[in-house]
Structures are given as structure tokens and as C-alpha cells.
Image (tube, rainbow, N blue to C red; front, side):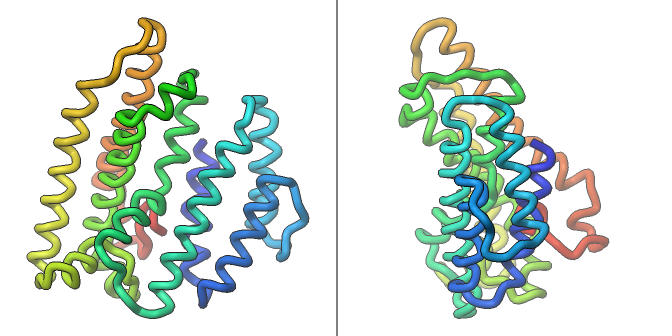
Length: 249
């Protein structure tokens, strides 16, 4: 789980240095094929080797359909990376509705949710995992961390010309100045957090055993939210000693 988190941050950084969405698409598609199928990479580099290693180690976990499930998240993430690259190439800030969907994915928390099932030994039936309330809680948890990350990194991202940030989106969408947009992003973050908290106290009921598993799974989601905040405030990642963002890279 720790190695994947490191790899995620590194590939996020890497894609931001590739010029053009078409090149990003080809490169990421190759890495996805390496992970999913063990295919030969288009470019042999440390990233292709890392994704091959990731595949082998996850196969060794021997969880049914694990490569398929993790691969689906990788596919979704890589497609979002390409979408972000399009806006970066055009030097255009995305619309609010579009960015909301992209940020939920690009922050990378869905991988943490899946890995949390392994690290905590949680087993959820498919009907529980796909329940609308559970899916909504996952969505909100990811979006909350994405908003927090955008708030923490906005000044650094503006300095390097990044366009994919909620503060910039709000400046364009709602015609706000920087301070107003930053305050608005904080409001959105807090509102989403309150909604998440309320929803997490109204979980659907199944059997006693499944309910316990579900509660533990929601605790994983909550720990990702609080953990990001703790990590962000206790490290020097945003203090100027490091020139990159947290999960965004």
C-alpha cells in the first residue's frame, strides 16, 4: 500500500511533464497494459518496471478478481490524467461540473479504499459495495480530500501554471477574485464534510456480520480524510521546502 502510494505520486508528477494529451494517452495505455496483462511496454523505463512489479506482487496476494478491480481504477485514473492534460495543453480552466468529476478520481483515494480492504481484512459482498449510500460515501470522501489538496496547493500550482485546481475553477465559474474563490472552496469542503459525516451515521442495514464489515470499511474512508489533513499539516510539503503538491504531485 505504501509503495503504491509512492508510485501514484510519481506517475502523477511524470504526466504533468509530458507535453500533449495524445502522448500521455499512449504512455499511460502502455502502463495499463503492463499491469493488466503483463504486456511488453511501449517504452521500457522505471515506471513500466514498477507497474510490472506491482502486478506481480498483487497477483501474489491471490485475491479473486483483484487485478481486474484495481485495473478498472487505474483505467479511470489514467483517462482522467489525459483529460487534465487536455486542459493543461489548452491552458484552459475546466468547468465546475467537469472538474468535480475529474478531481474525485485524480486525487487517487479509490486505490486507498481498495487497499484498505486488504490491510484491514474487510470483506464486502458485491451488493453492499455497490449500494448507493456506500458509493456516495466513497465519492464524497475522495472529493473532500481533493478539495483540501487544491486549497493547500493553490499557490504553488498557480506559480507553475497549473489550471486543474478548484480555486481557479471557482474564480472562472463564479467570477470571484482569488481570496473569494479560496474562501468558497473552503465552504464547499466544509459542506461536503458535514454531509459525509451525517451520511456515515445512516448506513444501510444488512446482516449483523455484514454491518460490522461495512462500518469498518467506512472507518477506512474516514481515516483517509483525517489522515490527509494530519499529514498535510504535520509535514513540510506545503511550507515552501517542497515544490510539489501532496497527492496531485
